[in-house]
Amino acid sequence: MLDRNQQLRYSRQIILKEVGLEGQLKLLKSKVLVIGCGGLGSPILSYLAAAGVGTIGIVDFDTVTISNLQRQILHFTDDIGKKKVDSAEEKLLRLNPDIKVVKHVCRATIDNIEEIIENYDVVIDAVDNFTARYIISDCCYFMKKPLIEGAVLGFDGILMTIIPDQSPCYRCLYPMPPQDGVVATCNDTGILGMVTGVIGSMQALEAVKVVLGIGETLSGRILTFEGLDMDIREIPWERRHDCPLCGQNPTVTELVEYEIKCKSKLV
Image (cartoon, rainbow, N blue to C red; front, side, top):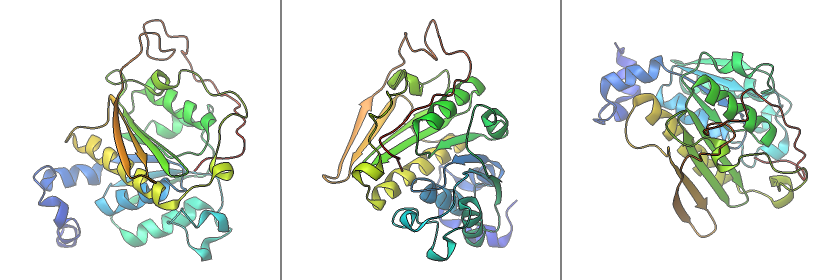
């Protein structure tokens, strides 16, 4: 049961019929992993903590720099030089002492990804490179973990929810990684911080919906956001019979680590 402070803290979402007391207890018992603690990770982590997700795992190896602060709102000027996971943990526990933060100070690689995600209910991908993105999506498919994918560049963002064996996987959209040097990044084209806030907030919402089993997720749909024109579109997305991961004759049957060189670097 919830104590009096918890009842007050979560009261505005408990009164939602889709959440209720049972749903809040489910959130407090849930475990969500967020990979990446930057522009997307900041709003994701903040809203998961505020909602009372009981255990939040954070994967990030990087330190806070001054160029992060324009969009990575979980980190402050005084945090420059700190590990992002330490900076994030401090803010999240100040926001909500009910939760537990588990820090994974590392890159997501084929050598550690299975061990990292095995104890979590939902995985949220907020990374800034395709090498990690393919490792995460492939591993979640093999381990049957729901995955919330999001990416942002410039004024635009994309969001999808992947439920293994039920929805299309990431490779149904992008069967193989892009060629070296063809992927533009925020260092090349720039990025507006508010766009990461929009997509990151939606990723957190999708994760909560998956945990609670409510509403209709973006499984089987792709949401695109064009911030400059404030245009939100939904694109139907189906499984590919020739998908190299989840298709009828898969060729990707184990984790593969690709070396993908971008023009520079993403959110």
